[in-house]
Image (cartoon, one colour):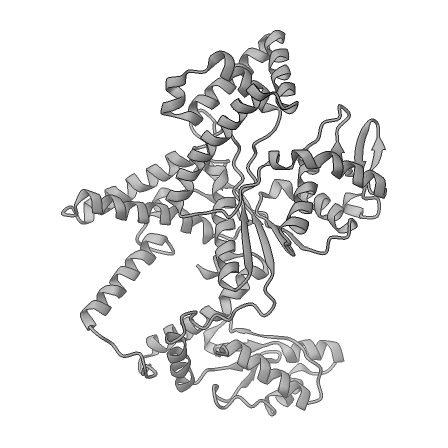
Length: 511
């Protein structure tokens, strides 16, 4: 099935060639419906290139356009825009085709890729919190769309399961752990022992040194410390999995930082041997003297004390994803503060000869009513579990008020769908780089562009279908009312918009 935008683009190309013009401009949905359904700026582009009157060029193009099958006679407006208005019969025919297509007219990618989508990435021994919302929801949405378009997608949860904090966690486990609390709420107990150990370490040099010694033992492969670390990872993953199940999000692989530990020495040696890295004041660094924006920002891949860092791990991650997973595209759904970091990692990868399609899909922050980063009253990150729970409770209250006769089990299930849907949609309907204020009143409203509004509309539409009984969709529907025609035209654009989401990684254009 060929969508209208594609048909018009193809016919425009023929008209340009017939008029003796090179390919130029594009066909896009009209910005103002008063002028039609689609428009092209081809004449304006050519006019600027050739120093000629764009309206005269537009007239020459229009006279050669063969679009009578789907459009009224195209017209020229303004400085030289070519406007197209779809014929009602063409829309009726296209809607019938869409109704018989399980993909609703959305074409599969002509050149499917193997894409690793890196998103979520919570830290072990810490709770998931509001700061994980955007990466998790955005990454999941992009992975779903890419898969629907025919790409081979690998969802990778690159959890934070290694680092200096584990020295304190292990010391706290050995000296402060409450087993009953650990059974009742594992993450809360791990956070408690870490915080208490950290507080003691700031006051007591002996505790600080003891925690450092526990870290060294872990890094050296000490069986006891490795066992404690592994329990921390397993307990954390169990809690993460509960959240992912509630959110209907899944991963294909979980490759945390620890997975790459054995690969880090080889990464540094390889970069040194190739000359891409060099010694600098005791550390091993990669310099980018030929890249102006990075010229004064070297990337440290081995610290003076011989330790490795996130950059070393991320270089090893690129190696693994390309050489082992055979990916030719890697998307990192990580917050905007990491822009510099990923510019450095991508620059290193390209210098090593990797031709994969690298993208850092950055995003803004979620703010509280005070327009500052959303926090609890005590200044800590709002736990994701608490946020989801509150969303379901608030949704349940609204449902109970509007339909008090519903059974509790049914009300709870609907509350989960509405509450979580509201949080997801409120996030995904925003442009990813825009900060937004988290507002329960807005996201749970039955008015405006919200999930509850859409869900309510869906329920009402299904009710209409039930009352109408069996409706034949074999023939093109008669679009006799202007509202019907406008809705049908909008539905036809769905197949045009879905692939565009991946152009700039913007699910919000579907909202």
